[in-house]
Length: 252
Image 1 (cartoon, rainbow, N blue to C red):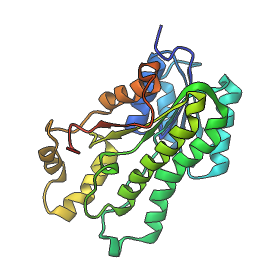
Image 2 (cartoon, helix red, strand yellow):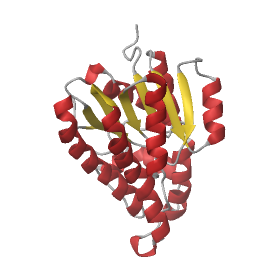
Image 3 (cartoon, rainbow, N blue to C red):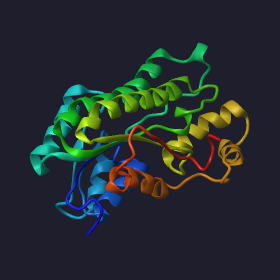
């Protein structure tokens, strides 16, 4: 019997590497999962490799209130109250000094990365079972920062404030609310970030990041998903309001 047996879960950003790795782990542990993303092809490909009846998917813009209410309501209509809400969707923006940072890009990053989790909590919490778990994906730059990433860093710092507030509000219902804060993950999202960073630094960004990570490498999505599973499950039954680092020591 899995540690999420018959639990109802939502994963946003489910077509990305960490989202999909977490979906697979949840399903392996007995959960029923609603996959949410705006990547139609990615969702279709994901569902083909998941057990029938254990997963379904919805296209949604997580920064849109109507879309958020729709994926929450569809999940409850299919499987009943939500046990686990993994708010994982995110975008990176561009790498520019604050004086040159495009306002429309800043707004887009804040909308997806921060407002998306706010809306997930706003509409998801009333539909959650007491004793459930909310997990949000922040980042190592949610507790640090670097030049050129003003929107991404601000959004990921903001998620931690959001999480701490919701953790206190949800505690009377025994709903735990935590952040997982990954460092660089070996995936397409990170490679896109590193492409811009390589241009800004004038050196290979991937190798540079490995040099400042004490464990000396990028993470895999699968190993970070183990941290997500811990926070989603009863194994973290006395953990709430926490920032759980999965960054190879990069923040030290």
